[in-house]
Length: 372
Image (cartoon, rainbow, N blue to C red; front, side, top):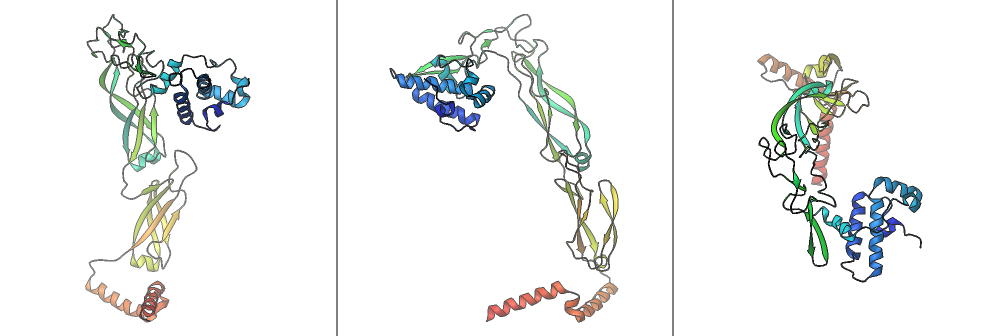
């Protein structure tokens, strides 16, 4: 009899994710497990089909061969549904109880990953730098080489689980596999702990690392230092260290991707008559020409004066927004001149203040329509 399509067996689409496949397998396995369906041959066959389908679709290499060649591509690479039901069903509850099938076969554990927040100035983030950081961490105990056992001794198999790291419990018609409460899934016990690390296999320490920060990094970027995280337990490999970039506020510039922004205050006279200003950039000062009759908020773009991102894409621009500054602490003579200027300007009306005149005309029209 020809085999059913594995995706059909589990009831998932062909582009289903690993999590969706696992969830579907659990659902079918729980429904058709022989303990719940005694003397039900159809349920037993469905359970075997689901087991075989999950064995293929949960393995990326087997799944790729199956997608390309069908059942012929994985012939001889599956157990054909003959695996022990108890072991299979233990996988379903493995994540819930802290482990899966074979979770305790090795007492070696990889160390945890660490994160370090690195504060940089804008110039450092843009141009790149190299910094020294100190990391409090756990390192492998040199006395016991990470085994946790006293020098000259070795950990022994756990007396409760026999070294498997898991124990099986009967709950009604379910046979549930869970993490061994004595060894916490390690499968080993230390009779004579190391006097240096007290059985942990690691000791607290502080290490100094050199971090090379590439040019163009931005807030939230991470640099991975392989093997610089927490030490593994019982001789396992160390985790990784992730250095996360944070950039301190800059007194002049703000960054938006590859572009930089800044505000430039200019005088009323410069805005009206025009002029030339020196503008700071991260590479030095440049000249910026302000045309006559420039309005506050006007944006000027300086090409290629921004940032080259660590992800590439060319250099950004510097966007300068001019802000017309109202003079303060006026002298008597300055006030007289401004009053005279105001009178002359009002005589010109809309020609010299089109926005102001237009706004007041709009207000008048609004009020008139409201009163009608």
